[in-house]
Length: 185
Image 1 (cartoon, one colour):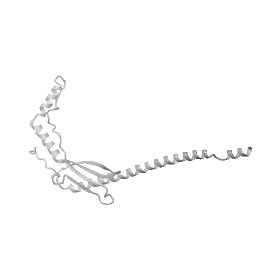
Image 2 (cartoon, helix red, strand yellow; image 1 turned 90 degrees about the horizontal axis):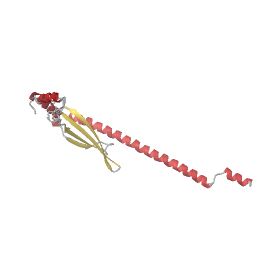
Image 3 (cartoon, one colour; image 1 turned 120 degrees about the vertical axis):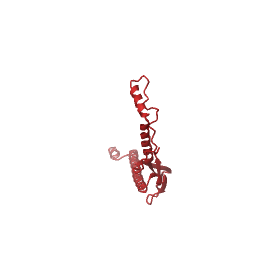
Image 4 (tube, one colour; image 1 turned 90 degrees about the vertical axis):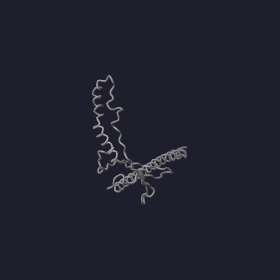
C-alpha cells in the first residue's frame, strides 16, 4: 500500500495537467490580444505621422504656388494624389476668403441698461462710435483685413478598413502686399 501512495504523490493527475494547460492558454491568449492591440496602435500612429507629414508638404506646396501672387490670381480649390509610395492618399486644398464682422453694428455697442450707472459712459462711447470718421476708419480696416486674409485648408483623404478617413489642417494667410485703399468699401 505504501508503494501505490508514493506513485500518486510523485506525479500529476490528468485533471491537474488539464487545468494547468487551460491557465497557460488563457495567459498566452491575453498576451496575444495585448500584442495585437499594441501592433494596431503602432500602425495607427505610423499612419497618422505619415498623414501629418503629407499635410505639411501639401501646405508647403500651396505656399509655393501662391507665393508672389495675389489671392485673386490663385485657384480657390485644387486636389490631387500623392506620388508613390503614398498613392493611397489624396489631398484637397481650399482657399476661403475670411469675412470679418462689422464691429460698427449698433446692436450691442454701448448698450447699457437704462438705469445702469455705466449707462452715461456707454452712451458717450456709443456716440463716439457713431462718428462718421471713426466709422469710415473701422469699415476701411475691416474691409482691408477681409480682402487680405485667407483661410487655407488642406484635407488628406484615405481609406482605412473600408471607411473614408480624413485629416484636416488649416492655416491663415495674410497678403501684406494687398493694396490698402481708403476709398474701397
